[in-house]
Length: 498
Image 1: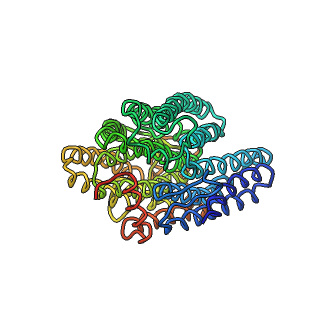
Image 2 (image 1 turned 180 degrees about the vertical axis):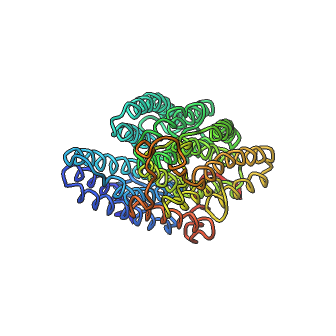
Image 3 (image 1 turned 60 degrees about the vertical axis):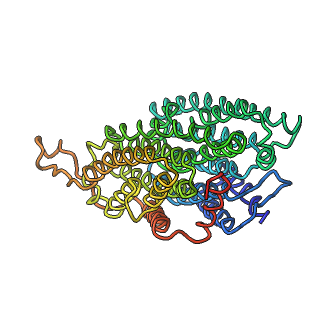
């Protein structure tokens, strides 16, 4: 199994370097191969019942890290498929080569950093990996070189850098806490810290955990440090938006969970769970209200991401193993659902040339495959059966009720229902409203807008959505047995009560 971790470390990085030099079609094939290979390798780890180490202990996977690695790798593979159709566009050939070279090199490097983050067995290296994702993803947000994209990228860099500065401070403080029990120069790995957690100074660990949630919560999109997220997700190219929402936010949550593990063993469950509950309730409340008033398609999906990050934080505040299993399943289901939804939004943008939902009409008629699948993806994000998010949120609520957190579970259900109303309104109004007949408009035929032609933009883009919906259905109806066991083991690693 050790070679699998090494391969995941090497392959996407090598493809990133090669993509800078090879022709676009070769870069497409390499990226597709890298994405599929990374997912296959990550899935191979699902059935492992023991931690896997590589490179002398620098790389390590346990059940928790494998869950997040699978989420990143799956979305990497889907995005590689979608990007082939998305980037094949008309225009100046030389400019197209320059754009695709930067895009494919950046995309593979971004996915490499997100895959490495769950692999490294060190809090400091985890911070470094997430910092790399910030630099690379900011360049990808600005790659279209528009005024809006540049502004969103700068806002993202400033806010994320401040947040990661706080996270670095939290990492240093946690290292300092370890010196009290382990002495100077100890091995800053998760197993070492967890084994010594009971002997760490409680006040120092408490400060480190609070700063970690605030710092990494900036990248996760938790309130009040979420403000970069709607702009960046709206202005980035659609494949990048999908990775930001479905993978990067999850990796940042993973970093918070590593601090959560140590804090829970050092202080008991009350403090770290209450911190996540406060941030989660605030994030979910804000997102539920903002979803209702959105008029931009991609910003709507961005605020939906804030909503789901709030659900994850609230779910972790419940102590029952059922709720924590639901949280980890939600990480996987949200990656598939948000990726599929952004893919659909990208197809709509390519076809209708607008993100304004007031101008989007009859998508089901214009895009006969993408339209219905986008509706299904939105319904999946709204926790409708039989998709994976319905199953995960059901487990979270059931776990909350079984652990005695009745009012928290009730608030969760109420706010999720409010967000569902906003998303469902969009789906029915924009997707299913008939296209306006241009002949009914005033003015001469020459000045009337031409009706959009019926047909898909790219079958590559369609196929990525099909695969995403299949994964969502599998997660909702009957997750694979090895995956179910993995989620259970990961929940126990996080201290969930049986």
